[in-house]
Image 1 (cartoon, rainbow, N blue to C red):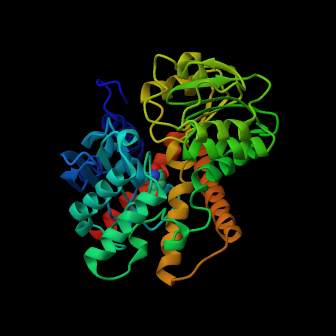
Image 2: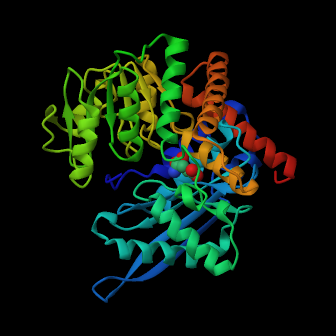
Length: 417
Ligand code: GLU
């Protein structure tokens, strides 16, 4: 994402254009789906601990709501722009449709460096965002959730601000909340758990065993860290992990519980961990392994490294990690890529289950949630895999064909096109 010449929204549009071309969609639908239906920009003045006011740029994009209220996370990142948020909101639209959730796609972003903010400053920023954007959110309109650098605690502050503004309780307006405030059991692990379900389906369909597989995981945050633990528990050999400050490699397999303890004690840093050799993030992506899990940011597998990737299977836990040019190279090289809009959909699936529980004012057990998550992820994988057998091309195209057609159908039924 730090590459200024890279525009993720152009990537999202290119992926969509390809699918719309194969589907032969009518021009009016193409016009509608290529751009967000609604987008908002807010300037947020926030008082810092120093007493000075700092003004933050922030956005919310409600990309398409034909299938239901828009749904998607809120990301805090220094490189956030309207185009990163547009791209992520566009991908959420297809992700919700691939999982057949009755939801549209949306995303929010605040341009900030969360690592330099104190807890009190984060709280004031979270509340400022809701004061600006909250009146355009509701259970029936647009529902945010955590994403990169936003946590259940941040969701809690946002919920409190929203309910204070509105004067009533409506916990389903935000998902990924702490459990005492109406959050769902299993939500925190859901994205990673969904990735493991997908790895299980790849094992079943293609015979790539998880047990003993050498896995490389890029990113050790909420998604990558929990994924590493779950894969480790299933007998995979996690040989490479990374965080923003560097990566670690150990051919014998990294002691993941020890690495997680180190990472959490060292303010989300992995450099200096003595359970392997230091390598660069770039070396992690191209190391010799069976399965690669990009679980950080977009634009990491590009035409400059796609030829060097050695993994046989890539499961995209991040949003948008692979560029269209790289996709083509990976496909020609016979690497099986499970696209983001399927692979990392576990998070939004359990967000949806959280909303359903909030609506009923009821709680399901973690076993119930995981069973339902598994069922939905397996069904989505089966549908995409069947489409992939029917239409020649990568799994991403198959996932797009299913999702875009579902959204297009909803637009037609509404008489929008
Ligand atoms: N931020 C997650 C994603 O990119 C989850 C979104 C949600 O739960 O609404 O899928």
